[in-house]
Length: 155
Image (tube, rainbow, N blue to C red; front, side):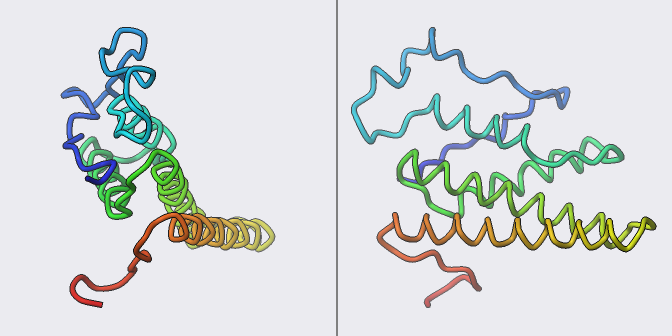
């Protein structure tokens, strides 16, 4: 079963405030009570919460746009089919790197600043893209099946 297969659509509270993560000290499924390599719901919730906080924020986004951005990040994370916490961490890093690379590209495209700043933004975007590639390569090495980045269906 994939690590992020559970429905986490309630990660944002109804008023669009970030929901607080589970309290590991009172949660009956705290990590020290679970057997090794089991899917820890506390870790899952904490990872999704951290991902939500790590996404680049755009001040002018509507509540609907923020929810869509979070849903897209969760969907990307689930697509990596992480089976263990270490795979989930690599996948989360790849998703965050992807979002920040796109943010750098967006800022460079809309910038009326100096060409030096645009060059730095494009350099950061390229570095983040390489970081994402490295995370995907590491994740690919940990999983039995290689990651397929392409259209759905048979390979």
